[in-house]
Length: 209
Image (cartoon, rainbow, N blue to C red; front, side, top):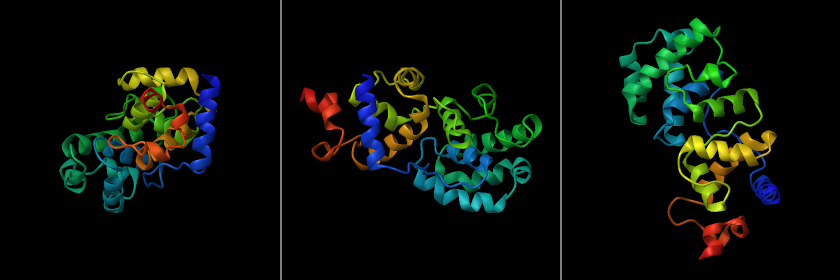
């Protein structure tokens, strides 16, 4: 398994040398907000919505004092807008009141913030603080790692824990970003491009067909 994992990492590294987060942000709390908006929504849609949101409320203080109803209007197209708007405002208030105006750097602290679950927390830890072992277990990760035989099941937290056991901690965050890029380009949920897949040799579904 160790050799298989390293081979997969090397192939993905070669294909995606600069695995940046697809969400656009310039401040730590903006990434927290963008990730919250991305739940059940595409990154592309979020990137269309956040410029106006961040322009209207250009500071953490402004976001924390915002009218939730107005935030709802601005993020409406991202879906689940009432919950997301509430979490954005309350989350920014917590950053100011409890964390000195900064997104905290531990899993325990992050999980106390409204709207922040393990997936969001791992992304923030990996992208903002480069914390080793940060595994962002989204739908791409669950689907592709299952196909590759790196994990089993579809419960995010269980898959995360399985991947933590086999991924080199220093590679985890970038691996997850690369998996997202790979999932969009090649290993799609429907009609994956198996004939041109660079990871085909490691794929259980292809090799069992």
